[in-house]
Length: 403
Image (cartoon, rainbow, N blue to C red; front, side, top):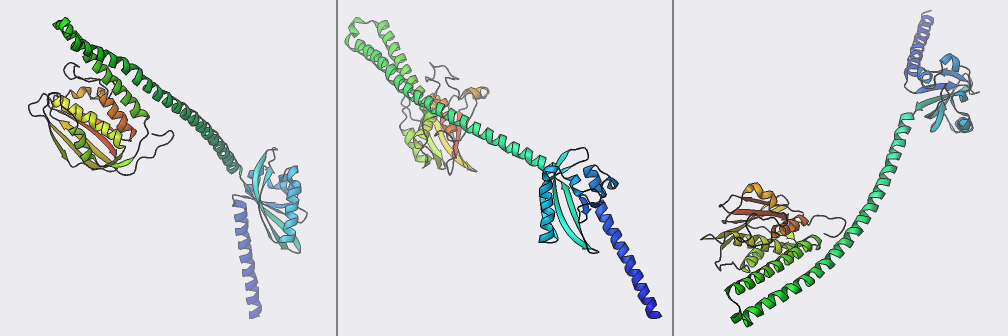
């Protein structure tokens, strides 16, 4: 008797556990986010969860007993039937497939469906787990459109860059030809004018009075100024079109060599000192031009001091080498520093300090071409400091036409 009671209690407990397990399974099925549809051997729906009702727009009562194909559009019916047949032959689980489902209102939408097969009471049942992938498909379509638009824009940009590069190369070629023509066609008559004035002064001095000689000197002076202006304009043009020839550049010996070649107007040499100057990566010929222009200015604007002094110093900051040339000359008002590096910009009268107003523009163009920057500091009567930066190590990467 005790053994029978114990057996009965075990059966009751087993039934309770089974009911609890079934309740939990039903809860999981009914609250799952994906649609779950179970069909019998005839592919008639025997069970759906709440997600199925929400996804397809049918109630569970409406779907019960209906063919599974009510959820699948007719064009995909053959493929889905094959899916069931494969599952019967291959095993208990079939991989997910991307197909289309049909809502009650006739709307077709993309889904992923995976099938599993179970046997119960000698019968076969199939359970489909269905996921609505509308958002994913829409997102992928948007990405595809964006990728296509990006490819189109990139192709358009490449075409425009190619066209603009070709135009720029043609313009550079024309500019070089024009510069060569200007150099020859303008300088030739200037040389002739200067030569005629010189012959008049030498061969016909007796026929010229003081005013006549003065006027010829004025002509020669203006001819010389025009020749210098033409030379500076050609240098300015070449600074923008000349290809860079990168090299490791020792700045101190170059600066001393440049300064030694500058002749002050009154013959008085300025004191020149160089302190802590790092090397740089740059085009030696173009940087020589930068130093020529800056040191010439320093000599010119400090020339009226009783003790003209010029200092060239440098330091390293990150990947840059910074250089500054300071003088104790007349200086300038710092309010106008923005004008200094513009072409034909002058802060002093031409009769007081002669020049073309192009030198600092050439400096800026060359330094900018190297990926550097320029600056200036001063006060009237307190001298001036002009600075520029250059790359320290590897030359910067350039694109498009040669720099």
